[in-house]
Image (cartoon, rainbow, N blue to C red; front, side):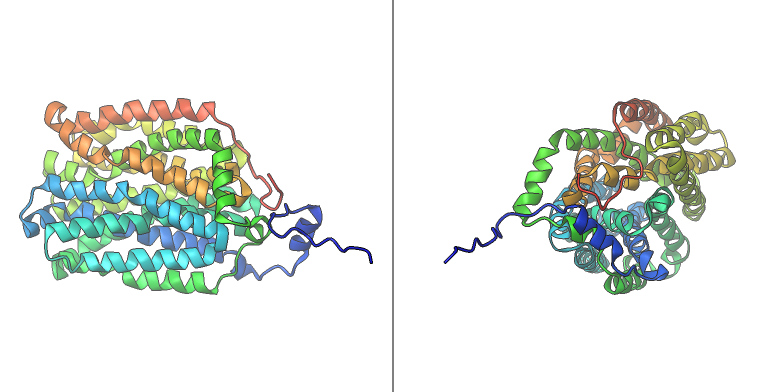
Length: 424
């Protein structure tokens, strides 16, 4: 009898053109389902950002509550940022191996539970531990949400949706500012940590109802080890993205995190007024992400980012050295149009550069490893202000990092509108 050769199931078969055509010819989802990935990513990132920025508006309240200095409370922001790479690794690896949808659901549950727990913290030590654990949950969301959104929308909408997705960060900051303006004065600081539960439930519902992207099904790796090997094979690209994102983190956290405290400390702006200004400049961030995200679809990812950063560089005199609250407010608005405009290109840019089988892990790890290196931005700037003043600490720092970012962007490459169904 002729011996029948059994197929080797231990090896992962790369998808050929027939696989791709079969996937493309499947019954496509309805219009609403097609946009569920973008909606889930946006909602998750918005709630994540809200939960992080709540602390920015509570620095003084938490210091008084726990009997510690404001510098100690700012250290909790650093702890949150520093643990985010752990979440990026855990949830990114799970997403590439087992699916975007399940990973996002687990991620949202994780950081929502920890955020609510922060509202019950009885001491500073417990609060610090909870904020560090929260960083793990926060770190997993971006890579999963970005890959999910970019894989489910048509490529012609990728730039716009990238801007909207990243604008979720500004939306979360805006929600935190609204909460500081209306919830904090009435219900106190603990209620601020409970306010994100309702939108988190909406994000969970959307994530539960949406299907897995076909691009993930086609390029799904055979094992976690295969995903890690892919990451190792792209180590040079990974290192470049980390370097780029470190600078971009300096741009973002250096212009946002301490700005309310800068207004209150250096210009004696009332807390409610500072929250109102934050609401306004986060409106600018939302606008910038959408404008420059769409602009990058037409002009290219790198040109889109560089144009947005050039705008931010020009408005530093208004943003840091304005002589009136009106000038500072205008500068803050335009600054975030530019900074978050550049960030609006990042989800599309990174997912297009990432290998197909590690489209959650590589961008997510690059993003959060950059956070690890940039985690001490707030602590550094807060110490620097004692030497050169608050305005020069913020303004001088941003001049250097924005110009450096423009240069580093020009050294990289892009894969504009790459077909995610095709193999690398």
